[in-house]
Length: 342
Image 1 (spheres, rainbow, N blue to C red):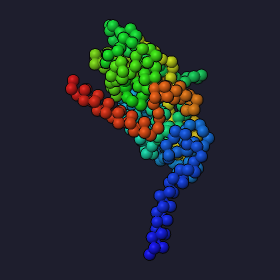
Image 2: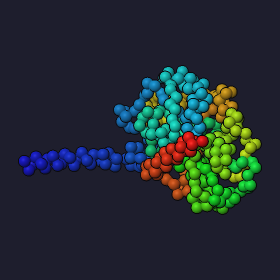
Image 3: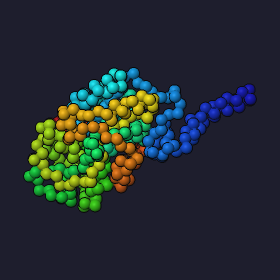
């Protein structure tokens, strides 16, 4: 009996230690979650070495960052998703997501194969969900970027950031680069410290921040310049009714990323479909003149975003992700409640 107990104890100990031993087999992980490995140190998850872990989806699931109404982008990307289906020989569906956290979770759980992630959430998607950024909307010689801008009503008295002390200044969501992390890092040198000189108010999305300034709910808002401009092009707002009192350096716009465990031959075929595609006139109009998917790497082209995060005291690990997800959900609920009151 004693020996049986010893045997059982040994088995249980071995089983308990197996995951840890498997994880220790990874020579380099960096900031990646425990499910992933980065032995080539390019900061993104390596393709699994075990062929059984590779996926070739029967239906390819695609989405785009929920910075605005997801239905708008499902329509905007329709010409491309039709092309992607024909090019890969797979059925392609557009998966509408309502938040950055939902998009990241969809890829982490294997329900999303490829999609566009906002600039800030891209880093969380890389570390938490095994996303591998490969392209940004762009042109022949460069990728498309955007600036963090702070907008106010045209007839408001505010001329510079320091004028907004004690005022209602909207951020978008905790994981957003331009809508939250960049302001934390870039505003203090301009004389305005978030959560000290003003209480951060999360609107939930860039378009809701812009509309909130337009309606008078906010005195100002920190938003992405490309979203602001597209809202003007679509007639949702009149850009001339606003003033921009701050503009940052250029950031890369939303990344297109694939799940790290896609079967390499299929993955490479899919990437070729992206890179060779040229946007329709309707797509170029919707995306500020961009006409293609411009190749990028997370290591090189997201360095400025990582610097901003470090400067704002933010991290892109699981602890930070879970904290920001809770804050994002609370902000989304609060914004919905405020909207319902009107």
